[in-house]
Length: 246
Image 1: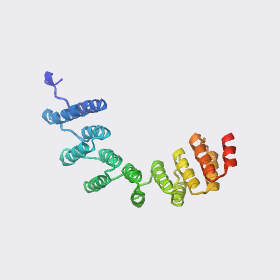
Image 2: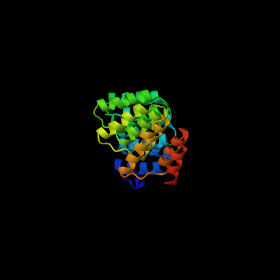
Image 3: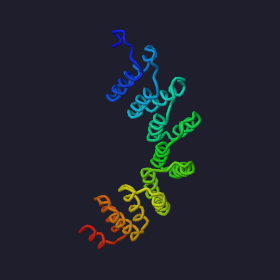
Image 4: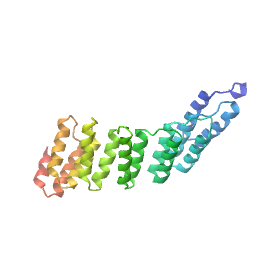
């Protein structure tokens, strides 16, 4: 194409970059991005998004941060929340929580509004690394800003609270879901039932299990195993056997 004197436009280059990134050839994608200015078509947010996403998924978070900073300093690029969320997710999963926090602050300073995905990534990262108090702070912040959590957001927090033996706090979140009309999924129920069992609240766990069935969610092996384990742990073997026979 270029040998024929035809100069590619940004759309063509972005299609190529996305295709190259899908094969994992990041270095080649970056070379193409760098050549775009020679063809008088500057890289845009789409160009950077594809490369940043591929880099961080490959575990090269530091390189993704460098490229993200380059994008922010490029006056020709109008960044949006998508690459920011990808990078925040990568930083959180890598345990680089302070870096994720700084990136979130930089986003806001640059006029990029955090959305439900941004906050869910921050919440998941902090729960993943045992910092549920900070996770809850981000949850409260998003609620204060009028950003409605999704079922994944709630499920992450409920699971974290239950694993830390905080069934009461988890139950409060579970009830909040009902108040704002967000339906729990199988994972949410599994976490909450497990939390109640761990807290010795077997009657409440059974009620929740039955409620799940009444609402049309088919109990799976995991649901039943959680409840059976709860019975056994609390020395209620007859009930465990009855559930097994069902």
